[in-house]
Image (cartoon, rainbow, N blue to C red; front, side, top):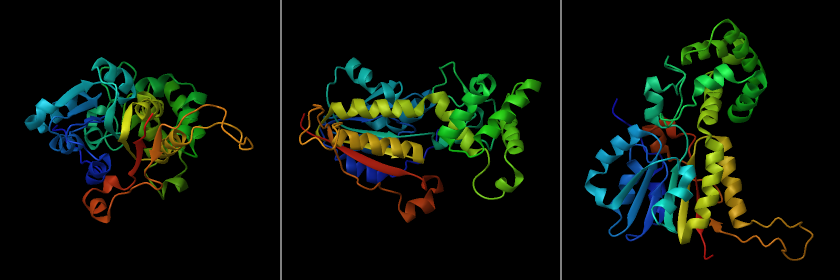
Amino acid sequence: MEFHHVSVLLWECIENLNIKPDGIYVDGTMGGGGHSLEIAKKLTSGRLIAIDQDLNAHKAAKERLKDHLDKVTFVHDNFGNIGSVLDSLGIDKIDGMLMDIGVSSHQLDEAERGFSYQHDAPLDMRMDGTKPFSAYEVVNEYDEDQLNRIIFSYGEDRWARRIAQFIVKERQEKSIETTGDLVEVIKKAVPKGARKDGPHPAKRTFQAIRIEVNGELDVLQRAIDDVAHRLNAGGRLCIITFHSLEDRIVKEAFRKQENPCVCPPQFPVCVCGKKKTGRVITRKPIIPSDEELELNPRSRSAKLRVLEGIEK
């Protein structure tokens, strides 16, 4: 399948990156290369570091960026390792970074990857197919309490405990091999009345398992901390999120970069010694326009937040 991914909030990201022609920029989630292409177009002597853990994305992006290859360095890695990636390239500071968090349209549409509850496929959900740990291990090896924890915490599903119980009961008879098998178990677990309204009953559980398999929330937190210390003054960190857990992490992490002091409020002066590393540009997140929502309904939950680097 051709790697197809519609870039969300494309022009809002490009505008907020404040791209300098000679700057160093990072696309931490390159995907099909939509955002990367527009960044590269604005560079002359500058450089784009294009990172993705999905090898299919690299194939597609290299074709899309073929007219700008002299300005792009491709890296097969997770953006959570941004510190070591930059160190390996001999780069100390950057002028901007973009992160488009979560699963791509292509990964959802590529049935055999196992990301979607709408296709029957092997339980996988690995963004980096070279890693050994997959959704199969989560579903078939986690105990009831572990399953309940991730489905409730990462999926925010009120039926988490019941879903966990039904998964454990089902696999006592036989292992749960495919996404279709898992969907059927979830449908049995969620009461019929609760399945009438709202999203697909498996949506939240699939989200939770995907986050667990790929360690997405831990990676996000680590990357924000690392990038904030790497931004040149005036450099921008732009992050697009697609659900409330991610957005809360970004909002709180940005707040801590701007106001890291942990002293009790009654202290007259700061004594903890923590120094601010950034300035929040977006007090409220930027969301897709009506025009974008009409063209790409999958963008409806997207939120863009921006942090600006300061003199350190």
